[in-house]
Image (tube, rainbow, N blue to C red):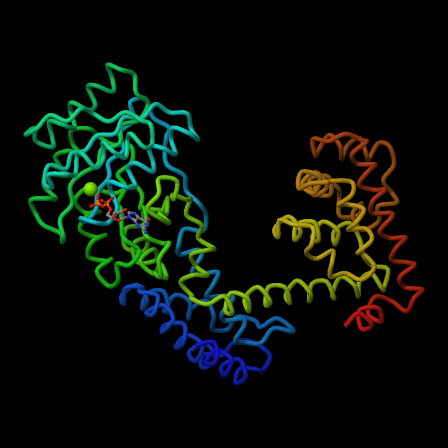
Length: 440
Ligand code: GDP
Ligand code: MG
């Protein structure tokens, strides 16, 4: 596939805005990649249509090919469609807080119940009670009991012959009486959606009123994902999804299908049979996996880097003309904050390497950047363009406005001054552009 993508990039070398045919060519391949990753067909159609709308007419940034631009747009849209960020389990409710596990047989409900119990015990210091409502399979309740022992949490004593709804009520009663924080209710599943199962789960849900109703889904689920998700969501209104078996070959397309159909966030992923193989869902990582290949993600990253480089070049030109001001500095800080690391744009700017080193040595962190941005935001446009006019009274006003101190304002101005000095020195050496050419 990477070869195919390569071809497209070759064909799409023109500059300017993305045309409809540029986008269609690239999206044809993206569509195949999504289907390959087991994203359900209607979801693929929807997603591709949305991306097409965003992409056509989008400006292609300098030093980025149109093909790379489409991939960047697709990747961003995919992350967005997967929820954009990690959503944790909702634990904000009075104890005992019920969590209901639902899903098809073999999806990993029982295993995940044990995993969540261990996680809540060790990370959140919650007192957890596990209860199996699975009276379908003879060994199911024993299976959960054994998992509970391994996780060193309590499981509700088994009473042979008690129906699921009564077990659920008994679990909640026990939890109230013995002050448990969380009760995880593991339910029975069927091989496919059936009415009796749905009625049973509905009744249990109505009885215990769970704070989380988690749909557990095998990542290998392909086109069926939509049917499963719709059925469970209509019956019990799921609040979150757990995707299991992501340790295997599955590309994780089910994540996109499930999320699109239910709108419920994917909260956790299972990555193995062991009890500690449970992780938070990371949309960026899954997006990379769904698009399939590291080389595509690499291309996207390279494209993003190139975009940063274009910004850096613009900045460098401003510097050469002596027009770099606090406004530009704030823009730069925002970019660094966005990238979450110092090795970003500063490293791309010629002559700034040394300052980057200084900043790293000074062990400054994001809070310093945020403080600097706040200070600059509190300045007037005139002050940002000509920081020299910042005298005592202005400094006081800006410090008060940004919730910092005059000392902080002074530090920022000093740092900006150092930068300006460095730039003057750079210009004497033929300007940043000459230096950039030498570096390449
Ligand atoms: P249930 O029928 O939904 O309760 O499913 P189980 O929890 O009994 O799991 C069925 C099988 O899948 C078991 O053999 C589990 O060990 C296995 N399993 C569950 N989650 C994962 C996972 O994240 N990765 C792998 N490799 N196996 C898993
Ligand atoms: Mg089970």
